[in-house]
Image (cartoon, rainbow, N blue to C red; front, side):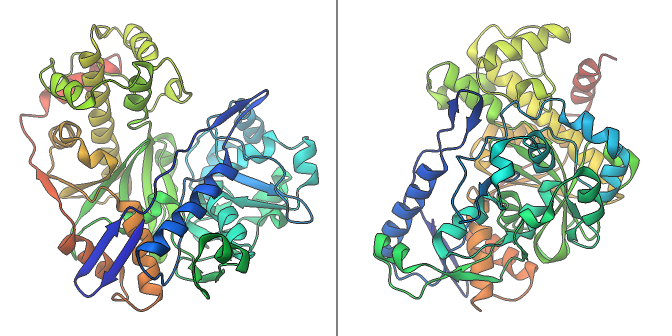
Length: 467
């Protein structure tokens, strides 16, 4: 994506799009990171033909990493977080550091794929034994582009090895678990320079140097939250929608209570000393996998038919780990409905309505619980990311939460990325409010007012809980 930023100006242009196809090899599910890097080079080449570039920034998903040997060479393609290698690892960790203490130290929710569990799952592997560095995905791409190594802070917080109060590594925790923190390169903060594109990269892409790579909030959710179009003083919740739904609040300090742990909220670090207090929900991955199982049918027609389907007839727990792995999603949804006594969807449209009702219900729970646990009331919900295109999901979320929903921008992560670059180069105001005001003033947004009453959603919630 190419961003143009200036006074009253914020525009994105898609320069290049390329697939991200995980590869299952004997023993593990991997990312094809070399293909991704080739796609990045192709994108840079195309971007440079569109306009002269001032800066480059990289954000991606969290927790996954590549291991480098003593010469800086990659020791195999990174393992995908949806791989099963971490099954049972958390229980072994909790035998050394109880779950309550682990949360009080890191503020990170339990998820089987956290980097902490991935490293321990690989503890006895020859690959980890040969490793001298672990670079999270955006940091790995940065290294290949610039030759410099660092660990960006917002993404580092998802490893479950960062103290959210000091915003540095928790050395004692790592020692107790036998994790060598020297594997990680020094921490970097959004806005800091990360080097310049290497001569070989410039030659491959046709770009003119020197061209700096600027550290951004490299966890895509952190970049997306930075681009939430909230006005100064607005009390808001956010839902970053895509493969995952990340629903929560922006806070000044982490919430590390036992009640917060039991509610499975996480405290990830955000831009400008903020905390992203949120719950991970399986998100539109459920719909994506259904569409894949149905061989990519006509989605607009399916959504239209789903809007006409009976509301809240069947709901599932959208945070249930049973939905984490790829494959057979319609069957797994049907099985989950049977297990909770809900009618099994009898058509594709009914399955889609089940997915969207379930996501809206999960959004309702997350927004309500976050306000209670953080003692932080909100007046509006900002829904950003790809799900902002889905009018039915946006309206159902407003209905379920009983709050207005402002949908957009769709490309929130890319906007947050380019805004941090622009600020670092003096092209925006200095505050996070300045960045968000620019988004609100320039990007197309759509508002949804809640309809109906909360009773139907309350009944659906009780049914799901077996009450």
